[in-house]
Amino acid sequence: MKSNGSCRICNGTLIETFDFGRQPLSDSFPADDTVAGEFFFRLAVGICTDCTMVQLTEEVPRERMFHEDYPYHSSGSVRMQQHFVDTAKQLVNEDLADSDGLFVEIGSNDGVLLKTIKSAGVRHLGIEPSVGVAELSRAAGCRVWTEFFDEELAERIVKSEGKATVVFSANTICHIPYLTSVLNGMRTLLEPGGVFVFEDPYFGDIIEKRSFDQIYDEHYFLFTARSVQEAASRHGLELVNVEPQAVHGGEVRYSLSLQGTRAVSPSVDEMLETEKAHGLGELDTLQTLGRGIDEICGALVKLLSNLKKDGRKVVAYGATAKSATLLNYAGIDRELIHSVYDSTPAKIGRLMPGTHIPIVDSAGFRDSDADIALLLAWNHAEEITSMEREFRQRGGKWVVYQPEVNFL
Ligand code: SAH
Ligand code: TYD
Ligand code: ZN
Image (cartoon, helix red, strand yellow):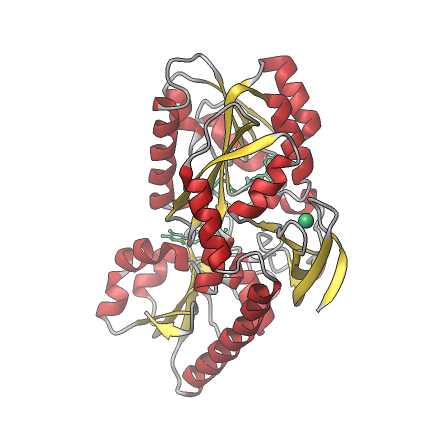
């Protein structure tokens, strides 16, 4: 345990609790001829003893992660498509109803949510720095600026488009180390009575499910209601609602508004109480997770080694960003896993970051001779195992690794 400087939010003492060592970028899949130039950084997580924000202790420059070839496409999961269509409709019918207000989305990716907002005839603007995915959303007719959102951009949006009635963001705010600039920007961008709604992986779920692989370069912050409330209040914003979401292994949707402009829902105090009861703001909780990480990785390596000794063919399913943490920390490479099946065109034919396991098209999974499949995309377990039901029917077995290593 060591103190590693100060908290990004409050300048308080940041205590580092777990060091994953040298890790590659999680969403960077090298080709055979680019392996030599792979970028590595030290992945470590800690907690602020003052405001309780859980955060990485080292930062990767944003342009290294989000660029023209950013391979994550939000529309890759049918379930997530539905989640965002439902979310867009709810926003249109509630916060955007009876207004010709502006809708801004931060991290709009391939337009998975923005398309529905656009179809409803709402004035909208997406902010998406990764050119490749931004182009896909423009092709679907959405208005998108290829920029990083921060304080300065908020001012430019207001000058050009006016203030926003709703700002939405999914799986993006936790990616932004300069959160203080984002929150300052929000104060500029929101109209009085407007709302900033964002959802990200919830630290409470990470602790409960021991889903430590949610810790990787892009997930700079692991939020709780308590840490979000504190960060918001430092920037003239107020946490007015919280709503758990059953996606990506457990998220929370937070609503912030300008201080004193909206009623605070009882859900906020309820979640704060639960977090206190579960010790989410305590150093101890993160240290216990650390011991769990070593236990899980040890058990998984043992299982995979035994399966290999028994002559079973082991593959993995889902070239997820989060699996970079698991595979690289546990030292699981081509010796233990033959290949990783995935449906993303930009990943097929490439190699897994750091471990260099080849990625192959998931269309070939049902005809493969694999005996065992490690489910790296565990957050899509239902969607994947039902789509690939023949695998089980012919005797194949799925392996999961949290809260502990097990056959599914
Ligand atoms: N909202 C989508 C995409 C999440 S991936 C979903 O939930 O599926 C995160 C996205 O945020 C990427 O497309 C990345 O390019 C974008 N991003 C990263 N930093 C950003 C910033 N400062 N402002 C706006 N978008 C950002
Ligand atoms: P995901 O778990 O959404 O996120 P992250 O990369 O942030 O950890 O990634 C899911 C991966 O699994 C993505 O590469 C697409 C792949 N996938 C399939 O190959 N088939 C499927 O049916 C689904 C749902 C996902
Ligand atoms: Zn702090």
